[in-house]
Length: 148
Image (cartoon, rainbow, N blue to C red):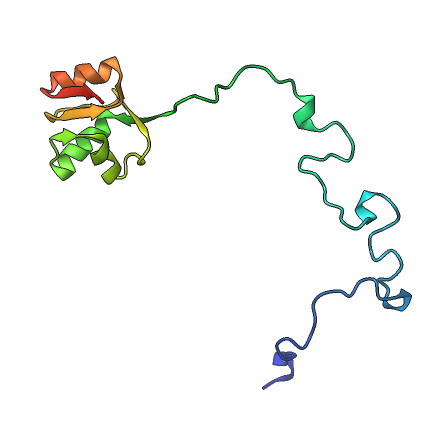
């Protein structure tokens, strides 16, 4: 044991500053909150996006356009992913359930097959939607594209 390795016992020193315990503590009076204003009051919590009374950014920027609350976002699956699945797992019939089981889509996803990549395997693909190029490539390889 050396002097430079001495430490106080665990829990013997309090790290929290005691605020509002009289003038002699150095943290009495205003209790480190400064004078007046919202921040000095009890129960104060700043609103999200508050900029000190200045008009906040989200109210200064003009709003335009329309976002449909009923929009259905499709999960894109490309032909190269189907080819990889056919090569690695030796699958000939690819359905939405197969894609979910192999981690390419989530359980409630709407799946759309897109035409990026090459498809040489003869596979029967059933999905919610297909692009024209994907249908052409699947049928050219000798497969079949079925809409669910």
